[in-house]
Image 1 (cartoon, rainbow, N blue to C red):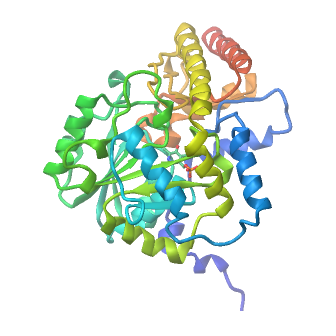
Image 2: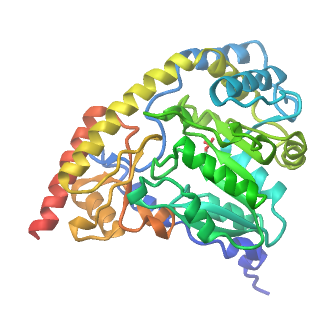
Image 3: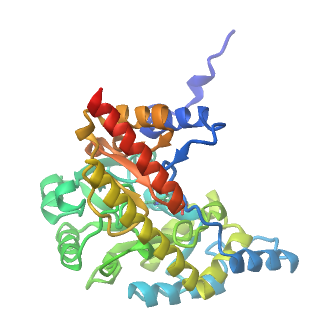
Amino acid sequence: MQSNPSKWVAGHVSTLPKSGIRDFFELVAKMKGDASVISLGVGEPDFTTPWHIREHAIYALERGKTYYTSNLGMPELRKEISRYVAKHFGVDYRPDDQVIVTVGVSEALDLAFRAFINPGDKVMYHQPCYVSYHPSIQLAHGEAIAVPTYAKDNFALTAEALEAAWQPGAKILMLNLPCNPTGGTCTREQIERIAAFAREKDLLVLSDEIYSELTFEGEHVSIASLPGMAERTIFLHGFSKAFAMTGWRIGYACGPAVLIDAMMKVHQYAMMCASIIAQEGALEALRNGEEAVARMREQYHRRRDLVVRRFNEIGLTCHSPRGSFYAFPQVTSSGLNEKAFAEGLLKEQKVAVVPGTAFGTNGSGHVRACFATGYEQLIDACDRMERFVAGQQQG
Ligand code: PLP
């Protein structure tokens, strides 16, 4: 009897929506051999991890650090995370039971969704948003409620939008400030209003602050630092972006002990612990990496100013992202929608950007351009975009 292997795929996996980003990256992959392609597509620092961090990890290996660590992560790393979070975010977490080290923020998100969502629980999240939120909520058998953010507000999340989207049964609010893909953040006052909303509706907040060190102006305010919020917030952070450590796969979560313990229950069976080498690198990053982060932030800031100025000059309206390394210009003035724009730009001018709808329907009319790319290359990419847009207007 012939068997069809697809029958073994779980229903909630086979019904996962196809990633809007996947088609596009397949197209980019086909052109990969072409050295003239400039990619503003992938959200990854172009910097290599600072040398002192790599050296520390190499030295750890030389000393024979090749074993499992405590499930929660190395105690000295948890202590360092606790110090760093208190210093930069103004929240005190006990290293012993309020911090868990994870395999990137990705694992921390997965743990949180699996630990806190009962089938059918509703999770509010602002959209456009990071590609993995919606499918991860679905994988955990939750129901996602998208809350729109708008270019006119610089993609800040507003309490009014939350009120309008709220439904009975909402249990979790997922935040990502500064936001991938929009670079949108909120002022202290806006975050205070979001916090008041979360308290009023008795929501658990998952706050993904992975881009917080890449805030270019104004203060970064962690919602966990506001009165009455630490007890209902899981603070998620990592090393991939600010410390240029994407390939190390290391991050962490902090929160009330009972909630970290629930995440730990999933983590101990699923992952056991994060790699000890990556944990050693993270330890050095927190102890001595702040200068390197400041240098990289300065570069991103300069690049942001360049691309935002050039995009607006070209006629692609672009708000200035206050954080992250993404610009999210509107491209409809070219006469094309976001998908046709991204495909045409790649085929005709060999510049890769991501259609905004890859980040949810509210991203329509926009593309995401990652400016974690060298300054000269960015100038070249902007020149090519200018030629592409001019070509559309003539054609
Ligand atoms: N959260 C956001 C908003 C991201 O943009 C990303 C990566 O792009 C992640 C989480 C995943 O981070 P990590 O590399 O720590 O798993």
